[in-house]
Image (cartoon, rainbow, N blue to C red; front, side, top):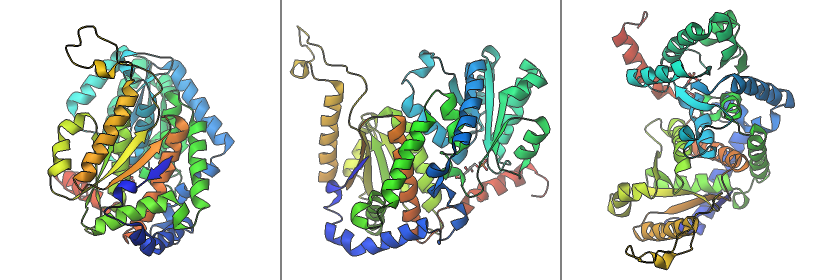
Length: 432
Ligand code: PA5
């Protein structure tokens, strides 16, 4: 993974970065020494190096069992209990997975919305498919996944019988607390634990992410290797000049202080749609508090160049852009020669789509820089488990450093309670 910020230097000079480097270095130390706010939720810092062979094998064994008996695995969860797994799976799987059934089961998702039509459509699919359920909730009490699970559990029991359903349902939750833990113990479901010191949005490298990713047929060992390698690279570099996470966090911090209040993460790779969703949740929930924080947004190009592109180029100057880019495509598709050349595209004959895409990226970056949008570039050589693992750890550490520079607790989410309280009161939940 590489970080390049030459196209942001017109807004934040190297001198300015150097002058503030100590801020980032102090926030980095707060994170790795676990001395800052919310420090009982810093278990993710060492996680990639601490996952044991036994844990990996247990996850792989359970995933293999579910895969063997299921055409579909439904992952029930919301926020940090859902987005990490989906980010990795959708980046790695075939772009048209639904049309291309493979050896591994298709992963579908529930519990992240309250659409009756969505759940009803899902039940229709599950009537026709062999399936299993992974229910994921750290608190074990979140309403959306709990509702979806109640419905899907009953469907599963009716379809397979209670005993067989118990072999097709896996719970990932707290070691001891919460309604889901109680239910899992009562029913005897296979259960994986979310460590106490890892919060939802930092939990993709625990069974929360690892089990769905393994069930989808991807290598959790390579994912963990990537995270481990990035951890080593970053933790062994306490100086700003050699630490990409500090550099990215400080760039964001200075841009924010120059009134760049929106970070738009963009990519020309549609497979990154859910990775960007994961990034939005990680940074949005970690930083957006005490009336502070950058608003994390996302866009997929080229499609959004023909919608948001106008705003990026000429709208209110409140944006900076973080471009997530992939150096090499896995496949090769080139532009064919056409005798008639009615579309005038013969000048591109034999060039690959990937080559044209990179040139489009260059052109887009130049245009946005001309439009005074600072561009930060984060690139990986190709999409695979290892580089996704690197990206995950890089963003997690950058987010913690960023939160500490902003002087907020990056590991709580008090604001999420407000809508819940109102909803419970309106629904007549006892005690509200
Ligand atoms: O990052 C977080 O902590 C949140 O997004 C949670 O993951 C989300 O609210 C779901 O919570 P739970 O896993 O307790 O159901």
